[in-house]
Length: 328
Image: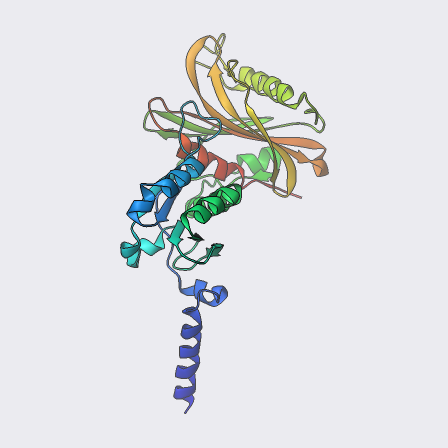
């Protein structure tokens, strides 16, 4: 009788897991999601993919990524015919399911077939589908981006650099992959670097007095001035006497408000270049308000990778920077 009770209880648990709504139980048994970084699997009929609905999807999820030297879409799109959306194909991390139906619907579900996973369901007539895609474009982009970020950060935590330089100098931590090496440590500057195929990926950190960056219409100018002074002092070019990293002068960087480690921050994305030398690439910078220690914590990543796409390099750096923890 006891064995029968255990069997029936287990059967009830597994039956509950078959219902996607029972996320807490089901998630325990889900496989790890798959798919390349920043890819959305678009499940829809081929004629729709080639038509107006497909064009709308490409215009929404294929917009250029901010702060890169060449246009690269924020997402890569992979068309999946509904008849093959089964088995391993359902394990993609970010999925958009589009279906013609008499019922108009826009719904977001998570961890249905794998984890972490986000699936956006859109249905209705063709006009209703396009309308819903456009109406929810910003929200769905944030949903997919956050899901990709979670996955990337989980991957990084699997093999992290154990160097304590950031903790020793600033009392902060970043989840940095083990492939990065610490290349410079000074009183107010730490630099980690990763070698890639044609160049490097870099993460740096330093601090400023609280209030050093004003919160007004001069914010971006102050951040540029800050970056240029730090570049001249700590990030030399081939000739350290005359060459150093500065913010590219041709274009103004993008500036956004952000929250890092629960604290208000400025997010800046743009291009860097080397003064007196033809060398450049993208950067992402966060100025984080640390009132508890009466300072600003500045963390930045930049890439030099000629002839290579840089979207996913910069996304990895973003995932690293957003892992910031400031010790209390």
